[in-house]
Image (cartoon, rainbow, N blue to C red):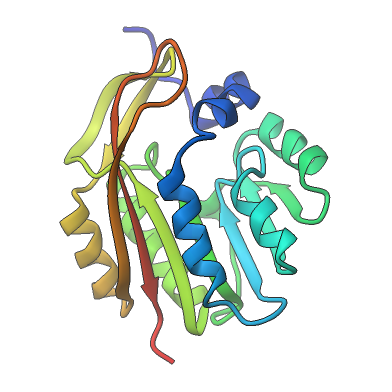
Length: 209
């Protein structure tokens, strides 16, 4: 296997192909629909790993919310700005972001930590909890498998993957004071010649008010 590609390299190369491959992920949209039912008007929402802007930022912005997305891949930021002008998109590594505690009504992170070492994921979950306003929600989606630096091929690209089981993610959320209020597990097959079935878990965790 060749050198694992960075997240920026993978998603710059995939671009709109990633959106196409995951466009029928109904569990993703269901998690967003549930979140929309809980947000106050004109909520401030942070979308980490915002990709092409669809469906997450697009649906949230269309509902009147103030959405800011960050992605590590320049091409994804470019596409998102074109596709979802109602939201803001910035280039940045989530590990380098800094916000005051209680800044956001909601944070979404759909499959955006799978190339971060486990220690970084644990740190990020704690930071996201701090950034939420009391009563705010984190929607976190991942591939719930016990892997720590395993080299795989994702949609034709060599990557190094890190993840936790669903149970362990729930423990991490609880440890930073968040209550898991929604959980959905699904199997999804991306619409791409080099993709196979993936287990997915979608967790919504709320910060006590």
